[in-house]
Image (cartoon, rainbow, N blue to C red):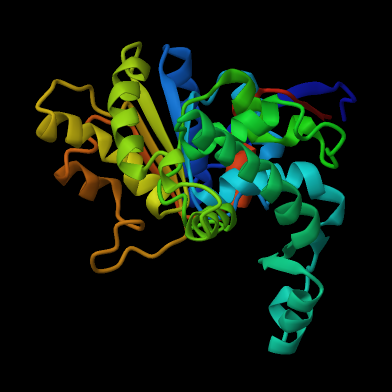
Length: 334
């Protein structure tokens, strides 16, 4: 037997091992993602759920840093939980046995000041209550100055100022939002009010501490997309759409193409690539679980769009795909 050692990339491992079913869909989607970028295209990431709590930033921050992701649509939870991980990482607790919890077990977690997200918990005092007064100050300052910003821009202000100086507990290289702030990456956060800090903002407005006008709205986010999309889609094969999970973070931005075409009555390039990682079941009227073919009928994709559906767990598939595209590691095989 030869002892000669060969080097194999993560993408090479994909090509060696993954041949059928969801593994082939993952391999093919990764190869097409890479080709899209190599041909001069750009990529939007639509990120649902609470991927930041699942530490997606370990690979996503590097994707942003290396210009593999050019714009993001995400839930308010993903936006804030990226910064929560940064300031409170050592206070997070993992519960691998969460499937066997009783209601009393979860009540005990509540009473300890933790908020469970599947198998991990966000510490209220070290996360929510650290960030709350800082962002509240920015909202009040904006009101005083007569300024208005998008939700993500307030987060950028916190990260790029001295507000969090000395408060990092997590690895800054694993905070995707920090990397996005450094690049001033275009972000949309549809339904931001459905988040912890969105609720804090609503309460502050209700109590007269600040004015709701200081935070730009979802309608303005769509108008922002109208301006952003043509710029990001002008080169190569255009702007691709990489979707993790379902829900509003994907539903909202993908509408920009037909809206520009039919509502603004302007010419627009179609999405240049589409991939969704989801384990949701396609059902009657299910949009988040809808197949790419259905999106063709809404003029969101075309019959020529490279399109993929990977029916699997995004916390496994997305980091593997990102590492294959980043090409940061090689494996030694005998």
